[in-house]
Structures are given as structure tokens and as C-alpha cells.
Image (cartoon, rainbow, N blue to C red):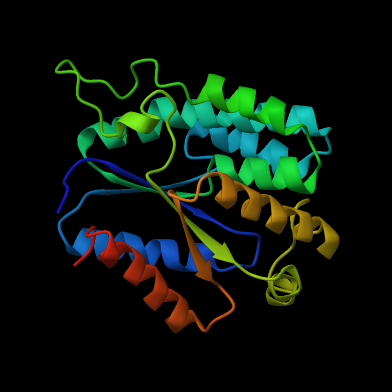
Amino acid sequence: MNMHGLFISFEGIDGAGKSTHITGLADAFRAQGRAVTLTREPGGTPLAEKLRALVLGDPMDPLTESLLIFAARRDHLVRVIAPALLRGDVVLCDRFTDATFAYQGGGRGFDLHVLSTLEQWVQADEGLLGDPAGNSPMTPEVETVIEPHLTVWFDLAPEAAAARLAGARIPDKFESQPVEFFRRVAQGYADRQHGHPERFARIDASQTREAVWQAVQQVFVGKGWLS
């Protein structure tokens, strides 16, 4: 099995079940001797967690929201993700940039061109993933912009996700949005997959938990990353 660093993101609207399976995947990789860095966005560092609390709790306009999210992402990349990839870890991240395009771009209706510019600035490699020998854990196609090797998208109808979340916990400002907001978010994910089909693995999240986990495992076995 490839022992270079692997960067894998889990995506989906709130209630799709992605967080349920990310820990199971971490255990599966560890069982095969891989070191795993399990993290999330926004968040993953002390600074990014502070910014997460602001983003999830305070009212703000979409540009301010996007700037804070990308600021948190830069700190996360510099302090956690890039070092872990250079060590050869499997990095499992609960959401990454696709979520920004889905939530701020699709849900909020914010300018996708501005988000693309921020993506290029914030995720520029700039030597983060280069070692003295000139090696990089990323593929040549994406080494100038750091992005996941694979994005597992848990696709679920917004109505079904809302039913799952009902009464589960006190909602943050995103979870309390109406179903129509999540329809736009879901479309944002679909658009993102359309633009990056080689990177996305879509999982039908309407199935039972066992069936979803089986589908997740099949993706990684098919890539030769799990036996």
C-alpha cells in the first residue's frame, strides 16, 4: 500500500452522517499500521477553533464569514495538515474547501469567483509540502494548490437530514437554517463534484448506517488504500 501521506475529506450537509463514519475509517487505517491525523474544519488548531466559534455563533455577512473560514484553513494547513502529510499520515478531515463552496457559495449565494481566488491564495503550496529532496505527497496536478486526494461526499436529501437532526442537539446558526438553504447547499456540493469528478466519491447517505459504511469501505478498497 502507498505509504505516502493521504489527504481525505468528508463532506455533506448537516445530518448526512459523515461524522459517524470518519472515526470508523480512522480505525480501519490504524488497523493496517497507518498513522492517522483526524481533524475538522473550521477548526483543527487553537486559533482555527476560536474562529470556528465565531463563524458558527455570530451573525456576519457572507464575505466576513468566508474570510474567517479561509483564515482558519490557512492556519490549519500550515500547522496540522501539511506537517502530517509530510510525515506520511493519513489525514482525515471533517469538511474542507468544498464545504465553503457549498455553504457560503451555494447556501449563502456568495460570489464563487471570490471563493476561487481565496482558495488559490490560502491553499497555495508555497513550499509547505516540499522536503529537501524535492518530494511532495501530492500529485503533480494539485501540488500548486493543496486539496484532498479524495473527497467522500455523503449525499442526502435535505428533508431527510433535517429529520435526523430534529431534537438531536441545540442547532448552530447553520443547522437552524430552513430546508431551502440546505437544498442550495446540496446543489453546491453537486456542482463541486461536477467540476472535480476525479476527486469525488459520492455515497448514498439515505441507506442504513451499515450499508453506508460498506459503501465507504468499498471506495477505499477499490483504490488499494485499504485491504
